Amino acid sequence: MPSSAELHQRRAAAVARGVSSMIPSYVGSAGGGTMTDVDGREWIDFAAGIAVTNVGNAAPKVVAAVQAQVERFTHTCFMIAPYEQYVAVCEQLAELTPGSFDKRSALFNSGAEAVENAVKIARHATGRQAVVVFDHAYHGRTNLTMALTAKVMPYKQGFGPFAGEIYRVPMSYPFRDGRSGADAAAYAIGQIEKHVGASNVAAVLIEPVQGEGGFVVPAPGFLPALAEWSRAAGAMFVADEIQTGFCRTGTWFACEDEGVEPDLITTAKGIAGGLPLAAVTGRAEIMDAVHPGGLGGTYGGNPIACAAALATIETLREIDGAAAARHIEAVARPRLEALAGKHPVIGDIRGRGAMLALELVEPGGTTPEPAATAAVAKAAHDLGLLLLTCGTYGNVLRLLPPLIIADDELDRGLSLLEQAFAAAL
Ligand SMILES: *Cc1c(COP(=O)(O)O)cnc(C)c1O
Image 1 (tube, protein in one colour):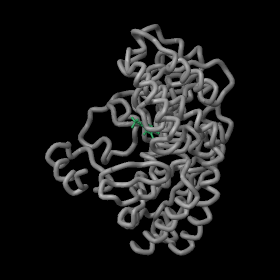
Image 2 (tube, rainbow, N blue to C red):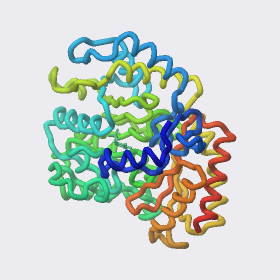
Image 3 (cartoon, rainbow, N blue to C red):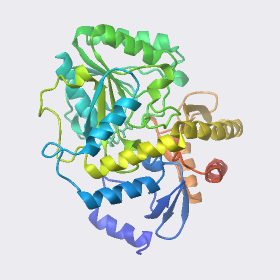
């Protein structure tokens, strides 16, 4: 196997610079809570490929399901010749997503594609155009989803013009706005009513716990108030659960925490154990408002990805993925609190389940410390810990281990994080 250094040289001559990587090491194999690079070095995985491999890399059931499916058939296009695996994934989504009402789903390839389609469906069903999104939101990198995404650098810089009829309002961000959920919702709703007009809103689109924007958990009451306002306004309440879904936050979907039942929900990342698959699931009458042929795509709901999703869901049921996420929080949170006691640069510890974050600021205040954040992340990488950063201000460290991480691996990863703080600051 070529070394990471050799691969890096080849990459520089062949791969576009705009596609960057967090670490300079190349993957040899991965499984459980670890990754081994081509140079034979083992890493603790606190990234799960950005909350994708919730059941771990090369999870046994997923591997078996993919192998069996790839030998039967690889692709027919569901729009030409349909197959059971697609239907079965939609059945599972209807059962697992919040709300006991009649649901339908459509399958796609990526999270951004699911979000685009949720917007198409909401506009078609309501006959309206405006889409309300929030500060710090991340919804993808395609043209429409760039417009929905908040952060300019690196996601939007130089890539305009962007799609129209997108309106951004303030997010509940307890560490920074100090508002209750009800106050923050009243403020956001006031902005919508003043600047957009309730009768023009097709969709209110929100991540129930924000991902790339900084793992921002809105204050209790914020999401229910927005869902209730949307219902009264005749707008679709759309939950983007692409990062939070499939047990990540300690429930199957993050909306369950406050009993919110979205009209439409987008899923991807954790759905298929690492294979590309995404979905829009929603109330039957909304989903079915679209004429036959109005939704689809060549690869959407590819049979191999669907087989992987069914095996992933079965695995999450078997291991009780939601309980596993809560266990990770129970182990990690006290360690993070102790770490914050030693390092006053840690201004906030937040998140739920296996989606936890540290926000780094000037001690005692809220001024972001992106340089310290980058230094800790770099030290973690040097020590062999896959650790991601996020946040509008680039000052949030996030923990996203696979839900099947072993206790000793989790313990090692947390120790490496502690060592990284000690080394960097
Ligand atoms: C990752 C992500 C997306 C985009 O998904 P892709 O598969 O990368 O297109 C959209 N929304 C949220 C909340 C995400 O975390």
